Image (tube, rainbow, N blue to C red; front, side, top):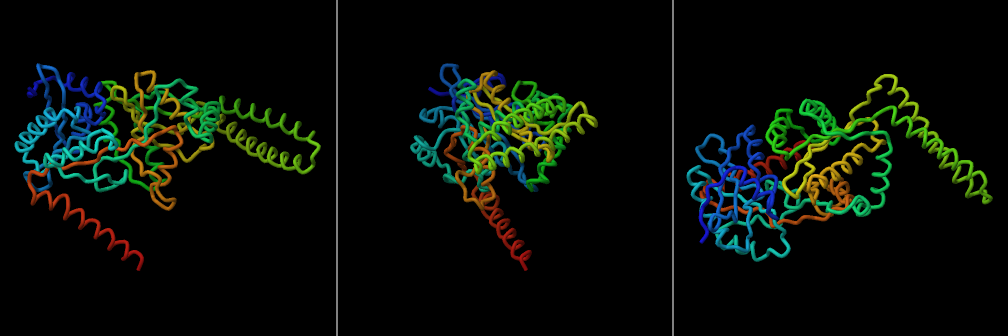
Length: 417
């Protein structure tokens, strides 16, 4: 018989980290990081004979100007969904807590694949859940992306690199000898990361968060070993040496090309090599100038890395507009994948994506970036709502979003005129 268990935060987190359906967003430290934005949490654990077999971290947020809340088990429940008794008990406990907290709905979006779990989707519907469907990965109609891109990092460096697309393999190799260094930064460097994030937002056209948000994430997750900040710095001395090596190589290639007997072939190769020489020489001049002005180097990019058990996550990334030809992001991704594997991770999640969008789609660039890293699509079963207050649910989840969409469309029409 499945019964409610009273377990510690540590026991909860250990279960989440060890379970195939466990996720970073079900950790107690993640709940702590959400308190800054008005969320609070309660936990559920169920099992047999004192052994934990399912948990759920329930997040609550108040509906403005009301006494009601929304209940959200982000990437939960964490359990074997084929064990119907466990799922039933978790839902029963969640319903009682949701009633205490005056929640109008209980949202779940389990980290389990859609393929092979069609019966689970139907079962959850039978329990009374409303399924939002197999939505687009970046749909604004659900809270978390339904599809993410995940790389298997449980292999050695050679196999990992080989899993990347050919052009990306070349970029990674080039980035490792370009003169940058990747290091794990301290909390104090979050301010530098936020500056890079603002620069990235201005370049790519998205709003960025205040430093307090990132501090909250770091302060809650880092002490438990679930988050690190990585930064990439361009070192002028190293870059100068690398560029000088490039010049020597191009010089040798020019000498070889000059010996080609086919005149057309020779001229084409010499043209390409001379263009390459001009570019490298210009970069060397820039590096010598940087060496004179900022001999300690400059920060080019940064990222917030997270880990829960065997799963690692690329949460946030930012980069400078300067010296992008030195490929700092490629060096950073490679380094973080190695770091993740060294710390027990088997997968590296790049986050949400629209799968194979059209070229004119706003998410096409994101898809292009994430698909070259040996990734596979993690296609999850999606978001479900267990409605406990239908009038309020209709107002909050249906009518208000429709109003917002209509307002956005009207604004676009007005702007066109």
